[in-house]
Image 1 (spheres, helix red, strand yellow):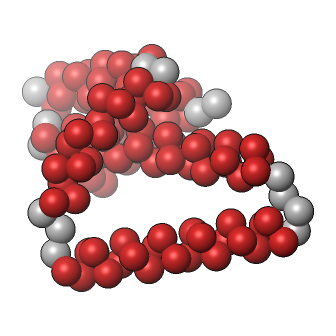
Image 2 (image 1 turned 90 degrees about the vertical axis):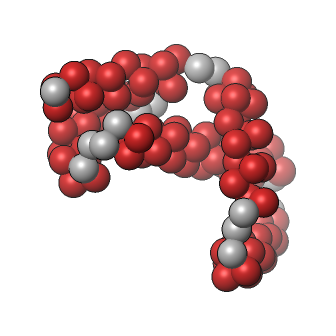
Length: 115
């Protein structure tokens, strides 16, 4: 049974990585928007702080004369990598795969998907 769940998760991971990054974002943005509507006040505050921190980091790199395309590309890469990991972790949770086991068992799959 666990092997079946791990195989299903492996297939899901293959699907996630086969999607073009913009398609992955497009497919998940509606759910993200819905999740945002149900946030606690604390999470909204954390989100605001996160926004300020990222804005400050961008300003710092602009001062260092980092060009906009580099900043935009790096932010985009971080967003897509984080989204992939997030949807995969969510799917593992849906399948009832323990987080510790999931990390151990799926580590090799993640190594094969980098890049």
